[in-house]
Image (cartoon, rainbow, N blue to C red; front, top):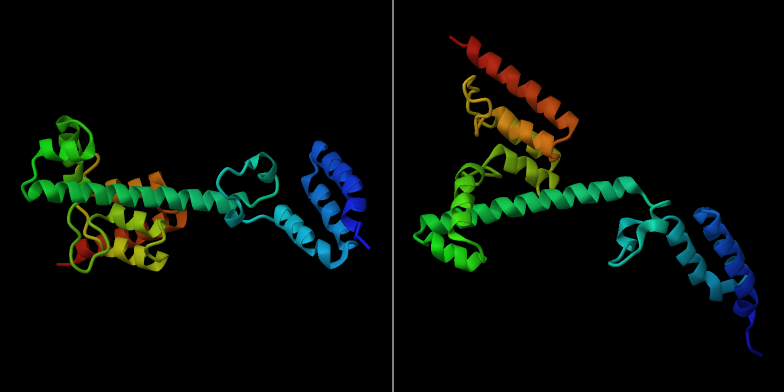
Length: 225
C-alpha cells in the first residue's frame, strides 16, 4: 500500500509555512515544519533536520546565490561580520604581497613598461604602485612575520597569526620616533599601529594593550643613563 503521509501533510504544511512567512514569523514557520514532520516518522527526519538548519543556519550553510532577505532575520550576524573582517584582512595581506612582488621584480631589473604590460595597466600607474611598495611592502626581515607592523596586524586579522603573537611582535617592534613637523611618520607608531586600528585589523583591546606597553617601554628607555 502506498505511503500517503507526505501527501496528507503537504497542504496544511504549506499553508502554515506561508502564513508564518507572510506574517514575518520565520522561526514560527520553521518550528511548524519540525512539529509536523515529527509525525511523519523516519521518512520525514531529513525534512525536520533541514528545517532546523533553516531556523539556526551557520555561515557554512549560506552557499553562493543564497537570498539573505529571509535568512538574515535568524542567522548569526556577528559570525558574518567576523567573516567579512577576516576576508578584508586577507585582501589587505594579498595586496601587500602584490606590492612586494612588484617592487622586487623592479629591483631585479624588470622595467616599469614590462610590469605595466603584465598587469594590464599604464606605466604611470606602475610608478605609483612602486612608490607605495617602498613604504608599505619592504622585505620581511629574518625572524619577523611582516615587513611592517601594519602587515603583522593584518596577518593576524586574516587568521595567519594568533593574537598573542601579533601583540608580542607589535610591542617589540622598533618604531620611528614621532616628528612634530611630519604628523604621520611612515614607520611611526601612529602610522603603523594606529592605522591598523583605524582600518580594522586591530581591536580596541589590542590597541590599548600595545600602546600602553610601547609607551612604558619608551619611558623606561628615556630614563636609562
